[in-house]
Length: 271
Image (cartoon, rainbow, N blue to C red):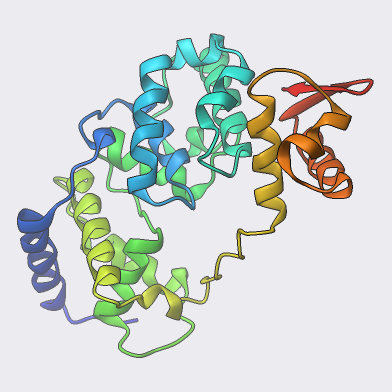
């Protein structure tokens, strides 16, 4: 998509003006070291920022740096993560910390290419860590940023792809201050949604989140929650969770396949 040269400066000014007046404050924005940025970005995947705040604060208090997380037990990580959802992220983060210590002498990589070699780190997370920790002008596209560019540059078009958005993101990035620029974009996108405008629905990549109540995700979370108290006999899990025996068994099988729980005979515990 072609954009007139004068449109970008005007767009940048509007985003910066909004940020100066309405910019949000989050604890991870105050911590620019790569480890804290990595923790926050993985927590923020598919989770609203306001929900992440207490989990992030507890997590970095318990594991203040990558070495402490690498030394920690997965069971402790899962207990801290309990209630945040998408628990496989916790395992990936734990594995990533161990890889950083093992392969990078405890220093979180600064390049997108090296970050993407870590367990559970995809293109978005790698670009975000590079931008927010390293102040690199990488191309960062997530739901709020996507919303801003669709709203400002694509009119009423449906099916807008990230491939169309990426050149605009690259052209608009403030190369002197990409860290705050992307924070400003995210805050403007969040503002649009609060106004009842959600341009991300016109993205080709938009997918409505499935209903949580009665879902496999809910069942898995219920099983993990009761296991935070300690190991249990598998037969006790339906009674403690309120799940049917079939749903409890299916949830356990799924969690075991992802190495979030371990079974020994009929005894089950967190991984």
